[in-house]
Length: 112
View (cartoon, rainbow, N blue to C red):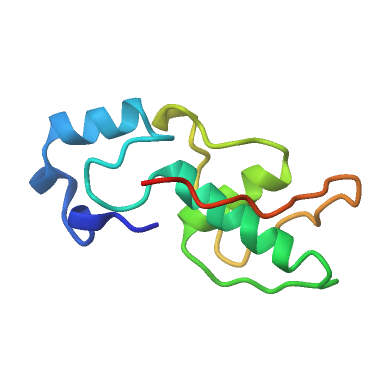
């Protein structure tokens, strides 16, 4: 995820008010100048659609992106609040295959 101005910063440096506001509107907040969690989900859905024809996929990525794809595979959208964000996958953990009944189509990029 692109955290914009927050990238590489410690949470204490960012400050509790800004972090709390982001956590309270996790799906849409972009106060840091990067991408929202909804935008992260858009990227994940686009990747799933573009690779749907690939029978086996090996992905190495950041836990945030992997969790977004995992939620998409389970039929969920982005959580509205940080308290609903899943824990990080375990090192080397495999995601369950996408059921053939679920079809994901690429979405248009959100307006900024």
